[in-house]
Image 1 (cartoon, rainbow over the protein chains, first blue to last red):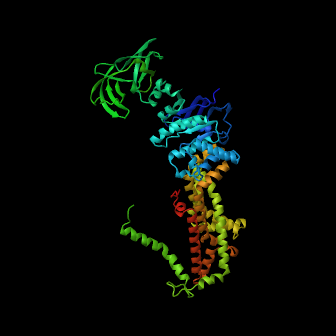
Image 2: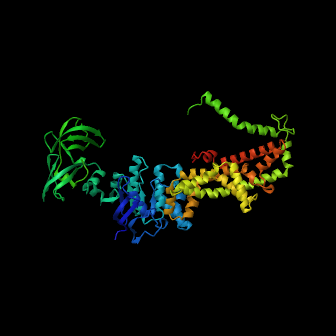
Image 3: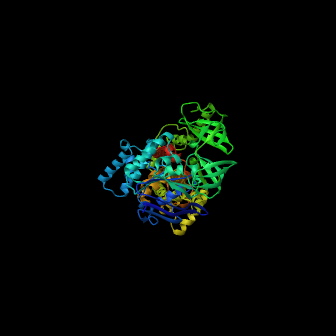
Length: 353
Length: 267
């Protein structure tokens, strides 16, 4: 039996369905991300688990008990808010101690637990500061310590890194993961940032339009997306409408804008479909060789790699090439595009052009 | 930083002079040795300050005004805090109407209010009583507090209250430990503003006092309708100094700009 179970969870605001019968589960000790664009219902889901919103239908079970009748203040969850929601008139120590005070923890034990929580987030030296006098990253740690000190059964993180600048965000990703492992706490994080979700989670729950799209490990959602939305929302992808003409145990044949392509084993019936190829799986070949002929339209240098926009008979392709230290092909150059059929994904027909 | 031009400098000086001139005149007049209002004074004398001590009815009136202002500001604050929290933090039917009702005493002419209160208090036999006065003053000054508290509530991060709730705090604890400390500058500022407004309220009060509850402004008003001696000038000077002292005290405690403008987050 899973530790946290969402079962047909639904939230309607009048005519609008924010969360549409969402079912998924989180194992004890696991780090799971709810990933999706803004308005996909992920924050509403978190609010319902926290007890700040009442579900219109469905159940939330935590460790076997149904949370429906339990008010937010008795759920005992640790929550880190997007704005951190620190108590600005209290010192760091007082902020962290608040949850223990509410639990009427004896003074001596309270002091020891606050110290331990502050050590865990490396803030021991700043315990008597006020949050106003701290940087964004430090406030984030205070919020984390305050949520963890009550030893919650479940830690909820609401876009925890979105207020930090890019460099600090990458540092905090690792740091957050370390803290979560050390505390051993089951964690559910809401984020719209796919790289954050991929980097930090054991499993990713991809949501769109209030509905669950796919649940899997970061590697699997990236490598084997189940639908067009997942393939384009996580990482970059070249997606084209195609017609699945035939399939057998060794592979498949697709027609795409007049070009015939070989694909991997398809699980769909022949008919309209969509193909997806990651930019980093495409190799450049001499013009006339490979599967497609194309012209380089745009070239962007990203440090570790080059990103090329290439015009082909199928449409525009994005191609990522590692920076090997040599000069990259020039804009306007004629090239051939090649990939192995196994790197192509065949998805149900979506809205891709 | 841009420097002020000569024109705006001159304007600022003129404006300050215009604001301060009446107070300077009153202070000047209060030091006159003569028995009539003269400015500039022909000498320096504390004669009219000594005269205050010979008029126990003025001291009695000042005492009543202080008590009244304290009671009314406190009652109005207790009304305004929950109202501001409701209006500022939640959306419900009639929210705008509620806000309009709370702010309406600012829009109704005070003379009209005075007559209305007179009639209304008579119905309950409260006319001229301290309780009646307190109620009426509380109504008049609630808008001042409400606006300051509302400004504080509007700038509040609602998630702090939710964070406290998730940590196990009940509603009252959340209010006492989290919300109230966060809006306290607005509350204190509103209370002081309300206190001063009540302390010098005349138009409404003149309708509803009786001889035993005469406030200082009413006492001064009836005094100058009978005589024109500089006693009112010295009494006025004392109240000006009292208000100033109160403002300085609040400034030291909280910072006036933070209270009245609502910015300046001094760490």
